[in-house]
Amino acid sequence: MNKNKNYLIIIILIFSIPFLTAYFILQSGINENLGTSNYGKIISPPINTNNFKIIGSSKSTEIKTLDKKWTILYFNNDLSCNSICKEDIYLLKQIHTALGKDIHRVQRSYITDNTKSSNNWFNTMHFLLENYPDLIRLEANIDQETNFILKLKEFTNTRKIFLVDPLGNVILMWPSQFNGKQLLKDLKKLLKHSRIG
Image 1 (cartoon, helix red, strand yellow):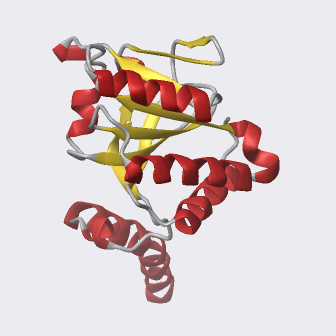
Image 2 (tube, rainbow, N blue to C red):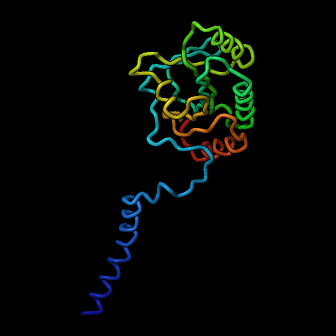
């Protein structure tokens, strides 16, 4: 009888130890310090773009939301696109092309503060339209409560690259002057394992 009781205790321990270990890891926050295999920084919790008013255009197509495709979102907190910005935009186009068969699953977009009275803003939009006609140019509503720009400014005061999933969630970010190979690896890994978009 004692032998059966010992077996029962061993079986209970075998099944409960993994659950207790997982509970301890989640409660202690150890899992937040573990390394990841991606190069971009994970945004937790993700920003849902559907909570904001975003409009834009590309090749005369009006954009109402950022859903349906993976979106590489280039955020420029400056009204002009300086040499760093231009290099980033060019590199993003090259990365997009390097996606090969998955190129149709990803779109590129550019967003900046929508102060349209500036000559710099007009020059930037003209430059983007002339050189990158397939780049989606976005504007965010200036209403303080629904301002997407203000939300992005929580992460940077200059330029950043964000990744928006097909459901409209901003999930990853990279710094400006990023490593193109690393960003491409992150994108390919996500597209390989994703069943959406």
